[in-house]
Each structure stands twice: as structure tokens, then as C-alpha cells.
Amino acid sequence: MEITVRQAQRSDIPTLARVLGIAFADDPIVSWLLPDDASRARRAAVMFATLAKYERIDHGGIDVAIDDTGTMVGAAIWEPPGYPGDRSSLRAMPGLIRAFRSRVIAAGRMAEIMATAHPHDRPHWYLASIGTLPAGRGRGYGKALLNARLDRCDAEGLPAYLESSKAANVPYYERFGFEVTGEIDATDGGPLLWPMWREPRT
Image (cartoon, one colour):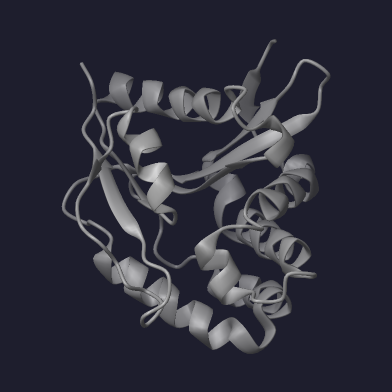
């Protein structure tokens, strides 16, 4: 089985958003933000498309995994060191409102708490989201996506940071060198996040 990981282009946004929307349909944080099971994957896809289009695609931080049939099966969204703070929020807001509807204020509060907890003392790559289609899990797509960017981190001598939204995924990330640094309650008593930091390997 051949897996190709490449940098996403603007033309990839609809597909990568759909893939991530499906991948995150069972995610505790996304389920808390989008409680309707029937519309969650579709509305999450709107969120990912909006963030990719207005905030992330131009910074070269989105990788996609392609299987040997040419089908996109996974994506990872990274923010590079020195990522700008403006987040193009005004342009993104209509899409985020479409995604979150009545939960847009809760989503904004959650983002603020996560931003406050985010480490700012050292330049690093931030893994904002990574997901693969459920049918492809266990086939190495997530590993390929992670290694593609972590190899770059190691080559550049840069750390990496993420927040795991599933406790069950913590051991998986630990295998790549990430270590838990605490807990974040960004949902006011709802699902927790586990911040994880990885020093570059020499």
C-alpha cells in the first residue's frame, strides 16, 4: 500500500474539509460544539473549509494523505512558527457562523481559552487538527501525516505542540515523542483537552 503525503492546495479545500468533517464526527469536542448527530459531519466540514480557506492554506501548513487509488484519506492542519495573530477572523466569521449557529459564542470562548493555554515562549509547529476517514484507520495514514511534518520539525530543530481531544489518543501521540503537559477545560465542565509537547529529535 502506497501513501503519498503532500501539501494541500486551494483546490483541495472542499475534499479535505469533507474528510476532516467525517473524521471528527465522533470527536468529543466537536460533538460538544455540534450536538446534532445528523448534521455534525457536514457542519464540521464547513468549519474546516472556512479555517483552511481564510486562515491556514496560505501558510503552507496543511498536509493531505492520498492512498494508492488517488483518493484523499486524511489531512493534517498545522500552524507554522510565528503564525500571525490576526487569524483573518472577519473574513472567516460568516463561515464559522454557518458551522456553529447558536454555538458560535461557545466556540469563540473555547478558542480563547485554548489560545491562553497555548505555549508562547518558544517557536514551534502547532498541530491544530489531524484526521483520517474511519474506513482507513489503522492503515498508517495518520502516521504518514505526522511523520511528514515531524521530520521537518526535527530537521529544523523545532518543537511541536497539539491538544488531544481524546484520552485514548494520548498514547498514540506519545509514540511520536509528544508528552502530556496538563489538562485544559475549554468547555466549562465538558470534554477535556490534553496539551502535548514534543521536543525535536536529533
